[in-house]
Length: 131
Image 1 (cartoon, one colour):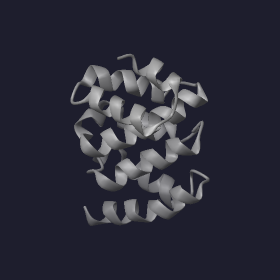
Image 2 (cartoon, helix red, strand yellow):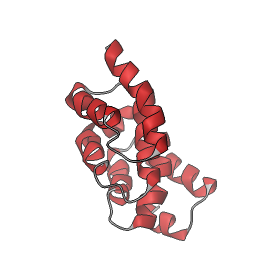
Image 3 (cartoon, helix red, strand yellow):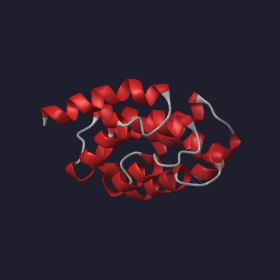
Image 4 (cartoon, one colour):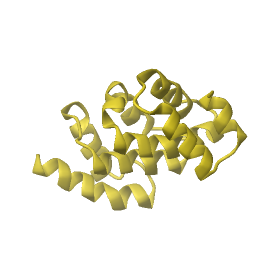
């Protein structure tokens, strides 16, 4: 499977599930998905965020090389889906100490101007304060 081509074909649960299955536990395939997620093509960026959100919550170890890039990506998101799926990941997984402060600061300061981020950042703040 070529993830970029699959995402270019459409945006559906079927494609999302195929990508999630294809990536599995493979770091190289995860890199292929992350390349799409960080791409400057808004459609590719948006569509890749959906499978990324699922994989990130189910297999957080695959995100280890990308935590800082995910934080940096929140500075200039191309689509609200990027914020939504990134925040959902960090609601459900252990937040690495290396990004804890940055994530907390972005969530408390309303860094990302979307209602979803504001609403869900409270849960992230609570989670960080408990650790």
